Length: 275
Ligand SMILES: C[S@@+](CC[C@H](N)C(=O)[O-])C[C@H]1O[C@@H](n2cnc3c(N)ncnc32)[C@H](O)[C@@H]1O
Image: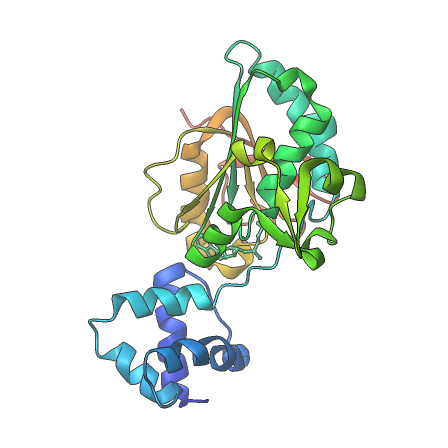
C-alpha cells in the first residue's frame, strides 16, 4: 500500500499535530508498514483511500490511532546500564537521604513504552535499598501509545524481552515463568503504575516527582516542543530532584531550566531555581 506525496505530507502533519513526533520524508515507507493494518480494519482499499477517510474529519479516533501506530517503542530492561549504575551509586542514595523524614519517593518514567524502564527501577530499589521497606515508593510510567501502556500494565514479557538486559539472577528473583511468558512479581508490580499521557500536552494529573527519566524520546520532537516539554518537566520536578535523559540527549541545547549535575556518558540534571 502506498500513497501520493501529498498524502504522505498530510500523514506527517497529522502525526506532528497529534504526538509532536517529527517523521522525516525519507521514512515514508514506515507509514506503509505501520498503517496498512489500520487501513484494512477501517475498510479502506489502500492507503490513499485511508488518507481520504482521515481527511474527511469525524475520525478523531483514527487520527489518534495513526499517531500511536507511528511511535517507536524500542526499549529494554536496564537499558544502557550506565544510568542505572549511576542511579544506584549516586542519585538514589542522595534522594533517600533527602526524603528520610517524609519516607516517600515519586519517580516518573516519561515515555515508558512497554514498561521495562519502570520495572527495572522498581527491581533496583528493592534489590539495593532494603532501607526503603516501609516507604511509599511509586514509579509512574506514562506513554502516548495506549497499546504499550496496556502491555506495561499486564507486566508479562516474552523470553526475547527478558533476555534483553535483565540479569538471570534478577529474572529468577523478581519474575515468575508462566508458559512462554514471564510475569513481574506482585511486589514489583505494586510499586509501578502506568497511564496514557501526551508529553506535548498539559499533564494535569501527575504529582511532583523526585526523579524523572525522560529517555530516548526527545529525539522525535522539534526544538520548540522540547522547550515546552522541559518547562512542563521543570514544573513537575521537585526543587531538589533529578532529571535523567538518554545517552545521546542534552537539555542545554533547548533550555536553561536545568543544569548538569553529573555527565560523562550519560547526563543527570538538577532543576534551576527560577524564583
Ligand atoms: C524509544 S521509546 C523509549 C522508551 C524508554 N524511555 C527507553 O528509553 O527505553 C519512546 C516512547 O516515547 C513514546 N512517545 C512518543 N511521543 C510521545 C508523546 N508525545 N507523549 C508521550 N509519549 C510519547 C512512544 O510511544 C515510545 O513508547
